[in-house]
Image (cartoon, rainbow, N blue to C red):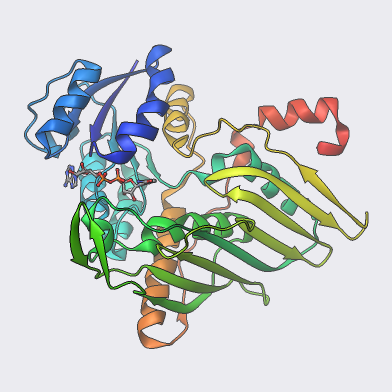
Length: 366
Ligand SMILES: NC(=O)c1ccc[n+]([C@@H]2O[C@H](COP(=O)([O-])OP(=O)(O)OC[C@H]3O[C@@H](n4cnc5c(N)ncnc54)[C@H](O)[C@@H]3O)[C@@H](O)[C@H]2O)c1
């Protein structure tokens, strides 16, 4: 049984990660051993759920807890990097919400630590795990739409009315929302070479947690990414988007078009246009119950089966480099070179059981 420690017991703990944990606990694969949040009522609530101490006095007490194997970091963004570093140094596995750090120096130390530490480091988002994303990735690799030349991705909403840190320095819509698109596009198109864009604050004052606040962080962005060979993508993101009915990701290739519907963190199937067929094919969502928190079950499975997780720290670093470059480009009006490498997503070690099963029944879906 794998011991879990949770640091940060706010919104994403209370809803999504608690739901992700329930079957893992029910099936006897995970036991929650320690929880911490500076807010005593949140600590008491989580401690009551799992029958653990409600009086731990710091994140360190979770990290150093002898029965904790995985540290789940769900705090405000600026705390992610330092806590992940401490947990890796203590020999623990780490799942850290996005972004894995808010500066490249810390992120580089994390990547290095993950290479030598006994524990895995799994940085959110977990988009590459969804069955729909895997199918798109396979279709693209098989040349179903030819060579990709253009892509558009978007994710946004009106913005949280909780967590003032979302709008303070070290927060912002690019780190919170655009990160999904950036990670998705890089998984599909490979490492970026160059970034430019417009990143700024469109709404300078908001009411958050019932009180007005001046907004410091970006809430609005168009980010242009050059993937080399004249393959260009744009990410549209912000706490400025009330609703939309457009695809999350549009991929344009020399032989066709592929569109992921829904959001990349909550896919709703996909559509493909192929010149060779002169037709669209519609691929309905195969697993509507897939959750964006799936990285936790994935990390548990990686530990149980002694495999490397699909989600790599180098990918998280690359996404952070792109987002910081976009912020710099927004300030200076320049294009910024991107230099970090990251390995292609290694689905080979993680067979897609659902896709294999579909292929047996319908060879056209292979
Ligand atoms: N809210 C969402 O829909 C959503 C979705 C996906 C990912 N995320 C990510 O999950 C993380 C948490 O988001 P949230 O919406 O739950 O925020 P939240 O503000 O509701 O919760 C964050 C919690 O972390 C605690 N905290 C802050 N600093 C801490 C520290 N140093 N040590 C321990 N605890 C600390 C706070 O007291 C708070 O309870 C963020 O990184 C966010 O980007 C959020």
